[in-house]
Image (cartoon, rainbow, N blue to C red; front, side, top):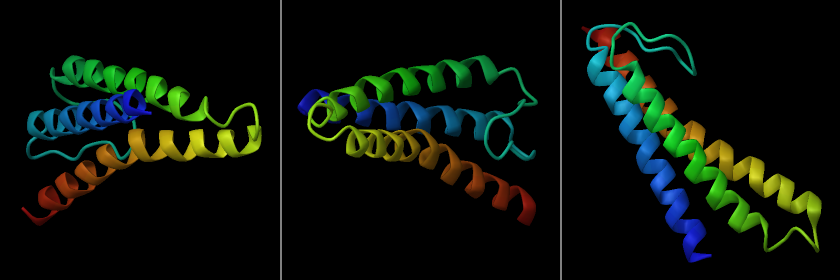
Length: 106
């Protein structure tokens, strides 16, 4: 379980880093709300950070779900969807919304 928490923490950090990098590179322009084209060259670094976040989150989720797979497969499927959604979606979405609000105010 400690490996899972470490991998999920690393995934959150990678997604936050990627979102902050995208926000910094697109200063003055709106970011795509979920996944879309970026208007600057930093997109390669952002994609690498997102890929590292996805791989780490998959490793962490598989370690968490492994405990419940034999006894409750539906519970493990629900846990995996919830964990992947929270770890991969929320950090990027929060930073994107904050960035787009600051661009709109300026």
